[in-house]
Length: 72
Picture 1 (tube, rainbow, N blue to C red):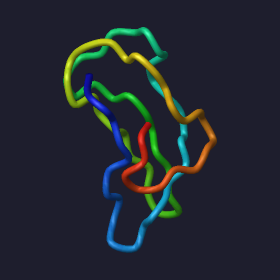
Picture 2: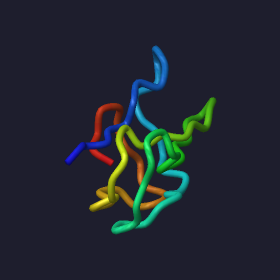
Picture 3: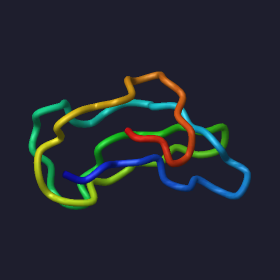
């Protein structure tokens, strides 16, 4: 199992908001397939899957705020 965490978003950015999940728990994913959209004051980014497999769990729901390094 591979944990997916909020990546470093910039020098002064410490948190982001979950915009939306592109996959649901239990769905298969491919390497580099976008999983979740993160929104900050300045940018919106997509976090890709680090490996192929099945998304087993979503720890943070749409609209919630997460810190850099937090488990998604």
